[in-house]
Each structure stands twice: as C-alpha cells, then as structure tokens.
Length: 329
Ligand code: AMP
Ligand code: MG
Image (cartoon, rainbow, N blue to C red; front, top):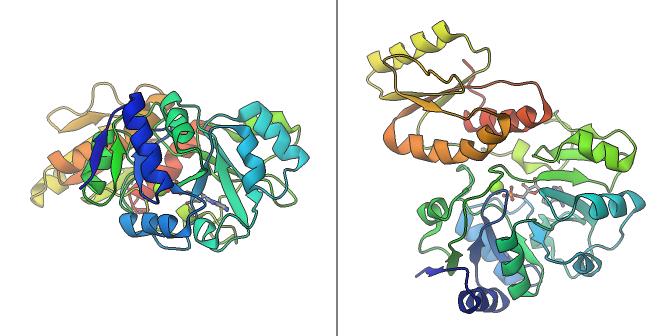
C-alpha cells in the first residue's frame, strides 16, 4: 500500500522516517517528480530499480538540501565545480563529481563518479531536509515512460510499488535537470536541460561542449535506452509542413486510428483533434510530458510538430525525439 502524504510537518516527518528506514518516497522537484531512497543504503537504492523496472547500469542522481553535504559524497571538488556550485546551485542542474566510497556502485551504475543535485523547489528541499541523508532519486516514472510532472502522474505509474508519495505542486520546469560532467578535461553537458550551456560557460569562463553523438563513450544513459515514450505510437514532424502533417493525420484516420496533433500553432488544424503545446519554449517544456500522458489516454496516435533553434528548444528536441522513438515525419 502506498501512503499519500501532504506537505505538513507531520507528513514530512513520516516521509523522512520512511526514507531513513530504507523505504521509497516519491517527491516533487521543480524539474520532474523524483523517486527517492537513502543514498547511503544500497538495499534501499536497489529497490528503486525494481520499482521502476530500470536497467541497473543507469545511474541515479543524489539529491541534497545543503551544499555542505557535498563533502560527504564527492571525493574532490574542482575549481570549476566550486564555481558552478556557487553560481547555479540550488537549481535545475546536476553536477558529476568523483565519488566517495560511502556511495555504493548501485547508486552510480558502477561508475566511479556521482551525480549531485540540489533542487530549488521549496517542497523538494523540505523533504530532503526531513530525510537528513543524501537521497538517491531518478524520475518517478516506470522506466521508458514520460517523466511525471504531477503527483497524479506518479500515482499512475507507482501506486502500490512505493511506500509513499508526497502530493506536492506540479513541476514548474517539466523536463529533467541539465547533467554537467566536470570530471574530465573539458566541461561536458551529458543531458541538456533548462540551465543552458551558455549560462554554464559564462560561469566557468570557458567553452562547454554538449555531447550529441550517442556513439561517444559517455555515461548519458538517456542516449542508450528507450525513454519518455507514450503508450501509443508517436511520430514527430520537424519542418512544420502543415500539408504533410494534415495528410499523415488523414492517413491515420483511414487506418482506423483516433489521432491527435500536438502543435504550437495557435489555431491548430481545422477538423482535426489538436492539442496546444505552448506559446513559448518554456511552456512547451512545462507541458510536454503532461500532454503526452494526457493524449495517450484520449487518443491512440500522437503526431507532434515541434522545432526551434535556441538552447531550450534543443533540450525539448532531445526529449521529444526520444518520445517519438526517432520516428520522424
Ligand atoms: P533520471 O533522473 O531518471 O533522468 O536519471 C538520472 C540521470 O542522471 C541518468 O540517466 C544519467 O543521465 C545522469 N547521471 C546520473 N549519475 C551520473 C554519473 N555518475 N555520470 C553521468 N551521468 C549521470
Ligand atoms: Mg528518468
């Protein structure tokens, strides 16, 4: 049985106790909901992988509420890392450090590095504080599904599989944190997010490279696994060609589907099921996973149309192409 908890002192205390005793608690952050366990308890951490059906070599992010906890986890904090920690934490950025041995291999998928994040969400910080241990947490969805951005989405995937769910606010950002690796010769963005390479580069005073080639041997598991996928077939259009989208829609209908077009076009498509993605890239990021989960319930084919050329758009494209399983129209 999963306990449904609220953000009051009593329930936060219960949540903290569950984590300290080795249980699993889902909690809100500003990016997406996380599924947390005591990062210092390997058995608890292993149960995260079971609850999610997650491959065991896909590492977790360790969440902290106070920067002083970093010294417990990271064996070295480089000058660059100091700069990023002081300028961008708390925030929607995860930094990869060399790990201390208190962090078991099961947290890091066997890597000798550990990814650490201090969220900016007040609710997340209150939960982490009440745990008072570093909390290992991936997104609180079943593996391969879109990340949950509301507590109701966590319930869909995790009811009965976890000890408790903190019913907090909807996530403001809507896509997962930027993952920044500072353990090598050059700063690398392993996963793009709302904190952009330009911002990081300004903080570091040097260029930051974004890893885009999946063949490059870095541990950015989002690249390796099926990810963010709705339950129904999905296709992505990148050129905004309305005729092409319309005729694909008509073909779906002819084939017996009840399709929907996800679009940024304010007027949508006449006589078609349409769903508005958002007016700005920030809005699209906020809505994307929520809409995929909504559309898979109402329709049985998702035709998404999206493009953009700034850094936030790049992060959205990273997610939405995976949602569509690289299926491009
Ligand atoms: P999730 O929160 O479900 O998106 O999963 C956490 C993600 O953080 C992983 O899929 C990786 O992309 C990243 N990550 C965690 N630990 C590390 C690490 N030590 N090195 C590189 N990336 C990591
Ligand atoms: Mg995830």
